[in-house]
Image (cartoon, rainbow, N blue to C red):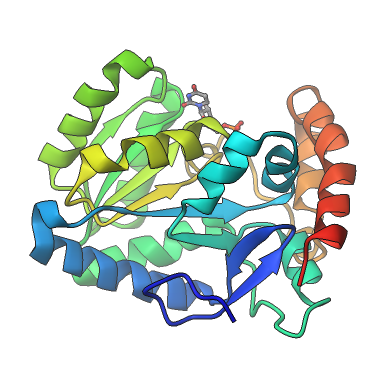
Amino acid sequence: MKKFAPYEFPVVRVGGFPTASITRAGLAEVMVRDCLQARDKGDQWLPKVVLSSNGQGLALAGKDSAFSEIMNQADIIHADGMPIVFASRLTSHPLPERIATTDFFHDAARAAEVHGLRFYILGAKEAQNRAAVDAIRRMYPKAEIVGRRNGYFGSDQDDVVCEEIRNSGADVLWVALGKPRQEFWAIQNREKLRGVGWIKTCGGLYAFLAGDSPRAPTWMQKAGLEWLYRTLKEPNRLGWRYLATNPYAVYRILRYTG
Ligand code: UDP
């Protein structure tokens, strides 16, 4: 089975994306190992870009080859949506579990407390970014946040933003700029972020941390219906997104899995 070099975990193709067959705990261990290595290597270390796969991403990749190419440059893609996990069960290598970034963040923050890793929180509107940072500091007082910035800046500011992040000494850069901007941004700017261990895209994470968006009940998450819960809460913003992407994502899954 194809692997994400140099990692040892297996990879399963779901909906066209090579998807890491790994648990949340396992991914947090990989993050810690990479970040400690990045500190040793400094400028010789190109950040690992860790992206996630969900129905919206599969549909986008099918329609936009530039996005598909960007996804294929990731160092790791993990299964953010439960439907991706269900689909993997059609293959001989089912994924062990879903790794929703919203859940993984907590594994990562606990690991950061133990290993002294430093986070930079990039993206979202100013108030939400600030509220998310406050929440993280309350929940994980030993996880150091070395910088934050809202996600409303132009590409002419990328150099300045990256310089600030590098100077902050961040090990993990969390990037919430919405899909697909955050994936393009992460891949296109990684060269300017040498020495940072991981760049992790995180979509709506800060809205959850700030308490602006509630999580779906556990039964809905397990049933692969978190998207439905979110749509019912924010029909104007998300209704069209899921209506437009779900059927095509199902097609991509059936056609490009295994
Ligand atoms: N966002 C941003 N800059 C932009 C576009 C979006 O910081 O140019 C932020 C937005 O404020 C939100 C986050 O990106 O906090 C995720 O956006 P999206 O609604 O796509 O997330 P999802 O609903 O997919 O989790």
